[in-house]
Amino acid sequence: MGKVELGAAKVAERSLISLDNNALVGAIKGGEKEAVTAAIGSNKPIVSITAAKEYLSFGTKAELKGFMSEIGATISKNGGSASKAAALQQQAVSLGRSLHKNDAMILAGAMNNKATVLTADKRFANFMKAIGFPTKNFLNL
View 1 (cartoon, rainbow, N blue to C red):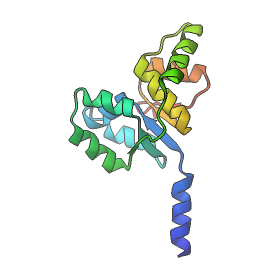
View 2: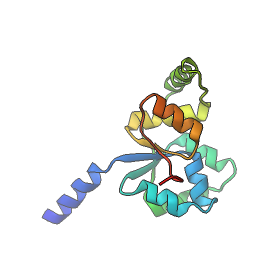
View 3: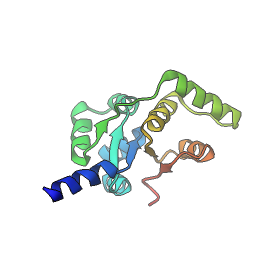
View 4: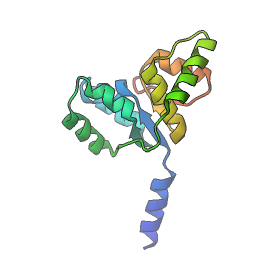
């Protein structure tokens, strides 16, 4: 019984990592599954509704569900709000940058979940670095 409790505690301690659309596309269709799974490491992967919808605009539900099952990912339960996303977009403008609406929604959700964002989008990653938010690039491990 002690080992089961210790195992459950270890799972609870894992950090969350939020996969954006290019991480999903890279893993499922781009031949970068090993790089994405290596970048996830021991973190608990989550996917925002926004990233899932972006993927489903050209990929299938079966592909997405299969990959998420394979890596143990869940859909984020604490997504970003439109007002928080708009505030992030305004913050980007104040820094002389731009932030797409979907990226802002993904980031807002990651903030709500205290999750690092996994992306290969340099512009998005540079914005997160500029505001001090943790990001990880699966292509540059």
